[in-house]
Image 1 (cartoon, rainbow, N blue to C red):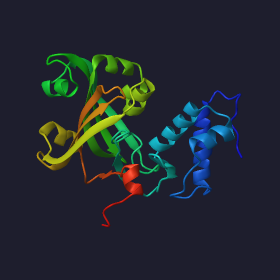
Image 2: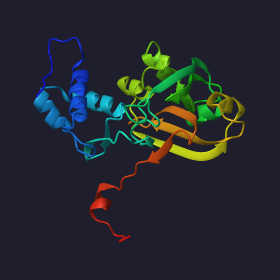
Image 3: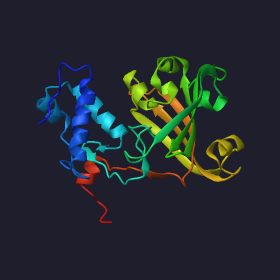
Image 4: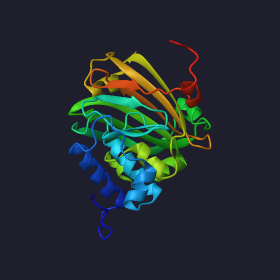
Length: 258
């Protein structure tokens, strides 16, 4: 078994991620297999639990694995071309699609400014209050796939200054989690709409062409709404799937035979 090089400047979590990725690539773990859990990886590689969690997050962002709450991490199907909506994960993360897909993010705007009234209300802030606004375009294999705008309280946005996410090279949700704002609960709304003129131009569509409109509010463990976004998604480029799981007690004691 390959070991962690304690003398290397490479972070331990990246070393472990590379080891597990190699095991997936060489067939040691097949599609659908459960990879070792946090406790086993901590014991096998003599690493802290926080380091192992970082490893699993990195592998998930690469779409090499997917994490099922209360069950563990499983090897993803590389042919899977879906972006998944998961409450405790980011929606439309940077690592969308299979590991072979090329994901590019262009940041169009990232600045402190007065929040639109609808965004201020969604964040629980006073109308006219300033916050942080980040607008981005996502491309998959060269095709424009999503136009999104995130609105955050000013103190949350300040945590992004100087971070790679503002250059389009890192995950926003991952960056916020590292700063102490992990998604504990969220509300997502999805509807079909006609693309607004600016969005249509950015996504290479005709004005009014059908797109999916996604709205999301993310809350911290303390109940604070720290991120609200609106996204327009080309469903002809990506398929959105929703992962759902019954409460543990309901799954154990089903009452409906259907």
